[in-house]
Every structure is written in C-alpha cells, then in structure tokens.
Image 1 (tube, protein in one colour):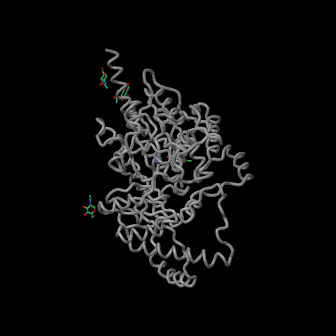
Image 2 (tube, protein in one colour):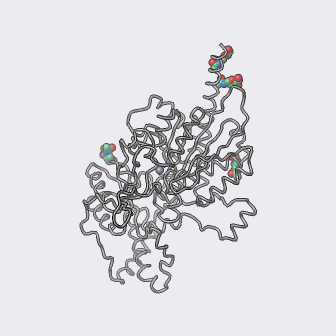
Image 3 (spheres, helix red, strand yellow):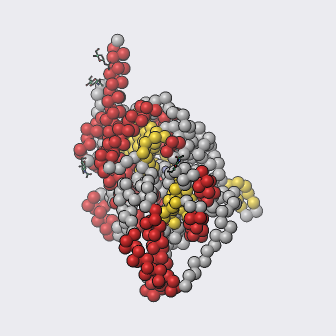
Length: 522
Ligand SMILES: *[C@@H]1O[C@H](CO)[C@@H](O)[C@H](O)[C@H]1NC(C)=O
Ligand SMILES: *[C@@H]1O[C@H](CO)[C@@H](O)[C@H](O)[C@H]1NC(C)=O
Ligand SMILES: *[C@@H]1O[C@H](CO)[C@@H](O)[C@H](O)[C@H]1NC(C)=O
Ligand SMILES: *[C@@H]1O[C@H](CO)[C@@H](O)[C@H](O)[C@H]1NC(C)=O
Ligand SMILES: [Zn+2]
C-alpha cells in the first residue's frame, strides 16, 4: 500500500484489533455456521445478472459472510496448527500480500452515506475500486487492520454492504492457472511455435514472442512496428494487420485498438490478443481484414503489467521512478512515489479534473502532458496515421461499460448522437452473444469526470470521430481478479461488438469516398 502522507484524518482512531477469541467459541460458531451455510450460501458464480447485480439479497449475504469468516477463523486457529497445512505457500518477501484484505461493496442511499463513505475512503490503505456515488454500488478494498471497524461503522450507520472477497490474496492466487513446467514449455514451443493460450494471463515476454511468431508465419498479413520503449526499456510494438490490396482511389480505413494502459486490468491485454489472433489466424475473417487495416497494441503499460505479475497485483500506473529532488551528504534524495497514471497523461484538458498532482495517488497525471514515453510513443504513432484511423478503441476493466467522449466535461460532443448510434449497435451485438449488458454513456454520467484520457485526446486532438473507452467485464464479482477462463467468452463478445461497428465504418467510408470521387470528377 502506498500511503499518502497528506492524509491524516482518521475515522477510526483505534484501528488495531487483536483477533483473540477463545478457541472454543470459534469451534461452536463454526459448527453452527456450517449448518447455516448450507441453506444461505448464495450462488455468486453467474456471469451476468448475478445475485449482486443491482438488488441486494442483503440478509442472506450477510449471513453467508459471517459464516465464511467463522470458518476461516476456525481453519486458521484449529485445523491448520494441527495439520501443519496452514498458509504454506508464503509469498516471496518482495511481493505485496493482500492476505485478509477484504473487498466490500457498499450502497450509499442518501447524501449522508456518501459523505461517510468518502471519509472512510480516505483511511490509510483503503482503496476505492468503483467510485462512491449516490444510489450506486461502490467497491472498497480494506486492509485487515481496519476491516472489522469499517464493517461495524457501516452497520452503525445502516449503510448496506456485502463482502465480495474476505481474503483478496486468495482471489489473486485463484485467478491464473499455474504456468507450465519448463519441459511442457519446450514441448509447446516445438509443436505450436509459441506459448500463448487463451486460458491464462501471460507475461510480457511471452506476448512479444507470440507477436514475433505471427509476423514470421503470416508475413503477408502481419507487420510489427516498433514505436518506442517504456520507462524501463521494454519495447512497444504495434501489430499492423493488413492484406495490402486496395481498390484504386479508395483509402482503406484503419482501426486502432490498444490495451493494458492500466497495469492491473489483465483482461484487457488478453482480449486484445484474442482479437488479434482471430484476425490473423482464423481464416473466417479474411474478408474483414481485406476491408480495413488494423493496428493493435496489446500492452501499453508493459512495465506496470510486469510489475503486477512480479510484485503488486493491484498496481495501476506506469513504473516511472520518483523524481530526484535534491542532493544530500548521503547522495541523491528522492521522495514521493512511483508511477504515472497513463490514462491521465494525454494532452487534452490535462490535469483539469479527476486527475491528481500528487505522485502518490493512483491517478497522478504526471509532471506535464505527455511526460511519459509510453503515451508519447502511442500518440505520435496515432498522429502519423490519423488520416486513416477511423475508430479508436482502448480497453480497460472493470464494470462492463462502453464509454463515449467527453470525459472532462458534462457537455455533449456535437456528434454525440453519431457516436452513440454506433456504440449502441455494438452493445446490442454484444448482448446477443451471451446476454452480457454493457452500460452506454459518457464517463461523467456513468462514473466520474476525468481529464487527460486517451479517448478524449484521440477525438479532440487527433480528430478520430469514433473514439471509445471500453470497460470490460465483469461488474464486480471478481473485479480485477477475473478468472482466466473468462478470457475467451469476453473476447468473443467484444469482438462481435467491434465487428458490427467496423461494418458501419466501412459503409460510411465507402459512401464518403464515392462522394469525394464524384466531386473530384466534376
Ligand atoms: C435513491 O434511492 C432511494 C430509494 O430507492 C430513492 O427514494 C431516492 O429518491 C433515490 N435518490 C436519487 C437521487 O436517485
Ligand atoms: C474462427 O471463427 C469462427 C467463426 O466465427 C468460429 O466459429 C471459430 O471458433 C473460430 N476459430 C477459433 C480457433 O477461434
Ligand atoms: C460506392 O461505389 C461503389 C462502386 O463504385 C459501390 O459498390 C458502393 O455501393 C457505393 N457505396 C455507397 C455507400 O454508395
Ligand atoms: C455519384 O455520382 C453518381 C452519378 O454521377 C450518382 O449516381 C451517385 O449517387 C453519386 N454518389 C454519391 C454518394 O453521391
Ligand atoms: Zn483502466
């Protein structure tokens, strides 16, 4: 947890809670709880329209939560010491552990609740995953030191809450299947030529290797365009997919897709890679590839992405080191925190709203617009190709939303209706696949206002009319910890949505080309 030194106000002056109940009590409680659990445990496995969707089955969940925490306590204090099979998989000391961190979903139902929750969110170590808004659920991550007091406080204030995860470390360890053994890896490499699958989240090097594999095996279709390097020197490579041929006088439209601007949103690069694979390796989409060119950058924030694999699963920003502020007898002195929020760093109303000037905040906008090598590399490339790129898509998670500019203001764009028209078409197509509903609207209307975001910049500065931020699933049962077996279904439905938009873009483009040609003939 990166603490923000400015924050001093505390809702709970005495947050330390020693959890030392008599052992017999836990045993009794657990026995009672087992019986209760059998009848009260809710089904939280549904894809969509799960139990937590909108309406709370509040009492049942509360009971369930109580039961599971008794059971855990019982295991830790009674069973584990006997069997010795306690938390044996100790994380390496360098890894940030979220053991016993609790993910809570709260529902503020009046202004007072909102004020209380906002104060609570300022507590050291508390993370806000989904923002606090009246009559909307918000997701808060609580460190174990405050979890009990927060729950008591919420109960006192009669603010509804449910526990989505009572031990985030456990959710983290369940998200991604174990990586294959070295011998399995060499076998895969020998048979398939690469290690990519679409049932696990891969490391950056494996992703780069797959891109290389594609460019070698589909040289007529795939080209890798190096556009720069990250802060830590990792290469950024745009995959260009193009069949090359084009009719005379017709400029083929191009589609841009980027992913992984925020490090912890693992589903985003995975879905970009799913789409990439379909376009290149699935012959059913040859026509689609012949109609438009595709530029895909699967991981923008490659440094942060690697950091979420090696050190801190919940890291969001880039990995820029703190600015050295001065020299002392002991050498360079740096203060502050690492990383810049790469989705607040774009040169569009930079730093005006929903972004922080504090390097320790998760939404730190950087020292100035485009201060970061990652955002500079992507924006330079897009500006160079702005005449052809007619659709800008950037993939994030979570919350299942299709966001339309602007994000920095509540004012509607002049062509808001045009953007909404195509977006609605996409979300309707998505819903037909597995029934998933994506909410549609601007960020201020659905979440909050932000500035310096990539989609606003793509529209405002690069002039790309159709520009969208897509918040991928889910709606919060797993949140950032969406299990790897959801990669394919999520990819499939998003690809369906994108295809429907691309069809419209191709139509619009050909109509415009006809018009231009007619004018030039006259
Ligand atoms: C919030 O929900 C409550 C109860 O459902 C309702 O009475 C109230 O009007 C809502 N407030 C707003 C601002 O929507
Ligand atoms: C290729 O595309 C077809 C048509 O959408 C689909 O049915 C098939 O599952 C795809 N193949 C792979 C390997 O994903
Ligand atoms: C544009 O012209 C081509 C042939 O020149 C035609 O096939 C196509 O339907 C036209 N598109 C529109 C939208 O008018
Ligand atoms: C282009 O011109 C042709 C004939 O001159 C006309 O039939 C067609 O509708 C025009 N296309 C557009 C898109 O204006
Ligand atoms: Zn994001």
